[in-house]
Image (tube, rainbow, N blue to C red):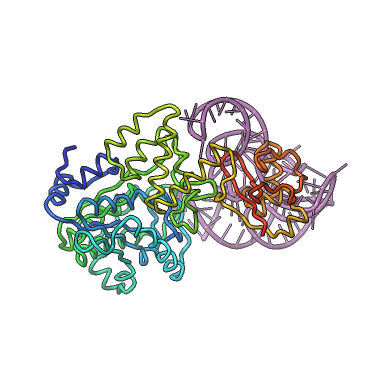
Amino acid sequence: MTKFRSDFLRTMHERGFVHQLSDESGLDDLLAKESVTAYIGFDPTAPSLHAGGLIQIMMLHWLQATGHQPVSLMGGGTGMVGDPSFKEEARKLMTVETIEDNIASIKRVFANYLDYSSGPKGGALMINNAEWLRELNYLEFLRDVGRHFSVNRMLSFDSVKTRLEREQSLSFLEFNYMILQAYDFVELSKRYDVRLQMGGSDQWGNIVNGIDLGHRMGTKQLYALTSPLLTTSSGAKMGKSVNGAVWLNADMLGPYEFWQYWRNTEDADVARFLKLYTTLPMDEIARLSALAGSEINEVKKILATEITAMLHGRAAAEAAAETARKTFEEGGVAADLPSVEVPAGELEAGIGVLAAFAEKAGLVASNGEARRQVKSGGLKVNDATVTDDKAVLTPRDLTPEGVIKLSFGKKKHVLLKPV
RNA sequence: GGGGGAGUGUCCCGAGCGGCAAAGGGGGCGGACUGUAAAUCCGCUGGCUAUGCCUUCGUAGGUUCGAGUCCUACCUCCCCCA
């Protein structure tokens, strides 16, 4: 059973992408025999996907690399409803404009992982389910699709249990989400011959619903594959950087900060992440994973650079690595640390340290927070710990490079550049 | 429809005789130790033009020198009865 015949499932399995799989042998046979089209849905809840979505994108990447056709489905229709799975409360409804803007923005990263112009079956596809969902006729939909769903059964899914058990209201609108997602699967199988839907483990119920619906509506046999829910070894949810979420879009999180996120991976996660997030060959990963102690730091750099290179390009990844090297290993000032411009005149007049950290650099949330950090020794100007919260920054604090380096903790640095 | 209970620091949970910027956790952030790791230990965890001022305990009023705490109405949720 661990011996898969298809390249795709073998790869998924050995690299740790598989959590649950419907009809293993059936799917394996199909993938070994022909080029299969498979999809993953992405909700347009934000203008960018974050690190958590990367694993999904990597699955699509491997799918294409092993001779199949990936489909990235944008939830332009389902986004109007909102997935209640495993959520404790309803999300705010998004306007159509927000949804469309988010989709336009999210789309940009996919081209780095998938080839839309060539490949098996003519390349990857980007599809928006608004295409069929927004024009649905309610009564027809109820009669054609709704009759196949048992409310009794829908209520039994784990994904809605928390809501029901806590007796928190689950609106009818949200309750329909799983029906729409199931319908998507069927529609995709009809329109694009999609046979497989992948997703995070929280999507299992939704996906299986689609398979069932397919049976009843006469599609070919459909399949499900889910990936494990990602947490770090110490149990934290993935995807938070020093300044918030680990966004994939460069305009929301720069390559340097993205690189830093992966550089700070816990030891215990390194091997797992190499398999999931890089395309390094397995024997190379095995070699790297054998390193321990402080040698593992070199492996973390490789990890960070590889992941960043896929997303932002090799050059940006290496620049990020170099910036980090200068900053952390030489303790110097690297010119392309994140920087903030400040009018030269203001600097002439003097800028209070607290304001510099809070208002200018945005390293801390407020002046009060800055003051507290001064007390616990967390703020540094040009690598010298700030001891006086009334200190004032002036042009005399400029380094030979013509900037002032502000540091919050050991890892967060911002350059103040007079203009 | 009737009866009972609950909503607390905009991250979460949660204590709170009428004097409260409000106990305690968790989480988060900083420091020490290390290897830009984990674990551990220590500190911090409303805002400000700051020995003071402002805003916070579901919403709106009221009693009081003073209300998270008492009263009234409303909203939302939970339990029991019908």
